[in-house]
Length: 466
Image (cartoon, rainbow, N blue to C red):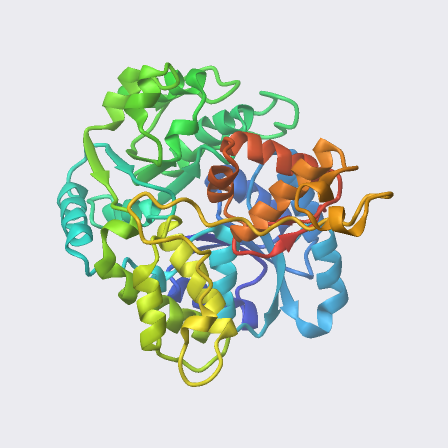
């Protein structure tokens, strides 16, 4: 359930938007103004903020950035307030939600901004391999043991973690997820354990970390294999002692959370390589759940494809259309190196590109991978660049000769940005294709934003530097 903080009075269209968000599974909190909203964010956190344009969204965005509160803000208001909405977007708002609200638009914006799946993203499983894994997940949900969820990128590890939380005795408590690969070490420590006022530059007020925000519930540490060794030691102590130390704090804080961890890495191999603590590994690996890749559960391909086709048709206001026999055959023949996430993206494109009463095979772009157990990633689109001065047309047409006259930095930048766009903003997938770490990719993208270049965000839309 994404946590939504609404800034404004819960009356009229804004209250209607709040009820729609709750109907989509969101947990809704309310603040009367931006100062109260900042205080709530310090203490409780949120996954997305909906702020009426009559309030100073720009001030709130700047205050959040100053205090390292990483949460997207969506401005909302009547279409007559378009100038105010445009000003909010220029100041850093992620998007604009017109009021009165549309239920499907709210669902789409919540999913894109918060990175959360609404109730239509409930797990679809028909294959025996997946059904057996889910049965094991339901069995361990009722106990308090830590669970390590492993599997390739795009298999649905976070959805399994949410299922475990929903089936546990902590289901009434919060579910808080933190992607350990998405933040540098300095920010990750503050996000995990919180900080006191004055703990570092920009810490203008005390703030609870994810451990405290998840009190009485479940904390998912996603991409745990990316965590720095120094932080691993602090995390181990927090799990063992059930207490954490805020940055700048003078006394420990007791915490009551259940820990779930997820990774696409072989953590035992990371232990042998000296990049992951063995004692932390065994503390997390009380119960292990391995999500099979999509190629190992072919019985799920068509049910998932039909679910995605129906969902994206509804979101885009298109009539539902069945998959043709040729399209179904093409889907079953593909190796799906990007797993369920790749299938979801393929069906989104297919729904938009299809013509006629069916979704035909011609509307499904699969990247050309062959159905083999260890299929390579889909090939990247060729980089086309203008000819350098003095090059003959034939040389400029050649893929390598076309790069002559350009700096390595420029070619690298274009390759990274195009790969990210090809992966529809999925940083983990882009890093895998490029053969670099997610941290290296994140640092590169941060530099590109600083240069004012548009960077594709999750979901495939471009975000320019603010």
